[in-house]
Amino acid sequence: MRLFIRLLLNALAVLIVSQFMPQIEVDGYGVALLVALVLGLINTFIRPILVFFTLPLSFLTLGLFIFVLNAFLFWLTGALVEGFEVDGFLGSLLGSILVSIISWLLNGIWENLRD
Image (tube, rainbow, N blue to C red; front, side):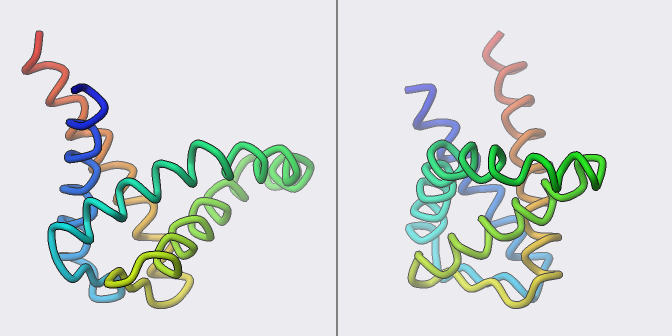
């Protein structure tokens, strides 16, 4: 149940970001749920491998390359999910940052309400 609620909160974060950023378009609630699921799977399975292989570059940039990696994975999600459009690198970068922040806030609020 906890995993399903986190999925819903992440989908809500994607919907919120799509309302504020014209570079990100979501066709509906079902697409937002699918985006949250695909993004979660990508972050679980692909991201650790890419972080490992780009570790020297991340070290040289003092960790800032992780933002580029997250933007790429956010764009990849847009390429994989029909009905989810991410336009440009800046849209992908800002979108990934905002989705992370909003998702973190929503999950924190949910955890405080549960206790």
